[in-house]
Length: 284
Image 1 (cartoon, rainbow, N blue to C red):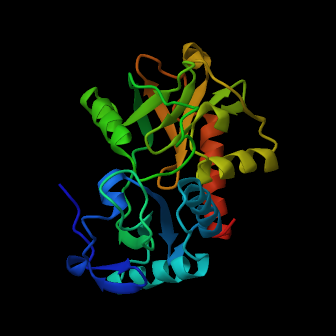
Image 2: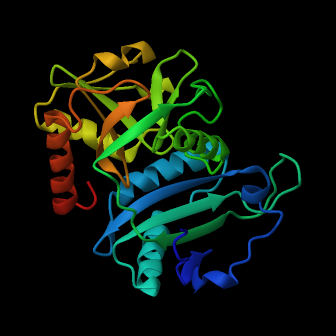
Image 3: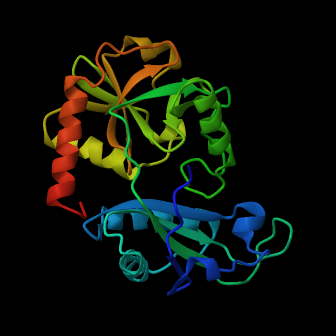
């Protein structure tokens, strides 16, 4: 069942009723997917890790040739939309498109379209099941590592995973190395050491991914960024995902691969450390 649409959104600088929002049919986000976005979560009315999310949004916008909205404006917009909807614990979505343009791929000269919406937080199960999809991530593509609104590939991959009994998809890259999920980064644990694919694998530079790596280093948990061939998945003791909304979530199965522990001791420790971080520092 679809969740109810919140009553208000932040649209180009103003809080307005969601039903009154009108985006031009010539907006390039609508026409060609020319835009970037960020998803954040809010704890008690405060967006978590907002500085890191804005920095990644800036990288995505610069990669796409879109002017990046001011960080202070976006932060206030998130506060305003949560207040308007009386939703202090929320999932927040910032979307920036290149604005109106021609019907083809050429850019227009209009200002960006910027929206901020909020919704309820989705509870995740303790463990997740992954299905490897038959379409590889292109680690050398123009949009590799850029968080764009061109998400049709992810939509198709997630649908494929769910039709196959999974809850998240796993992409390999063109070198048959583990890359990422549709909305998550992946980590592997072997001999109490944590391994995650490097950014050169084509995966997104996840905010939670970076925080997990930093938590490992601060807490004497060995961590390495290296290529993980798909044929190596069965050799690990634990596997887990990270994302803004999942935080740290154990993986119970990838296709026919079942890790010995789900969640295992390292995953459990990092899950606790992540929750402690979020409780003590909302802008790490």
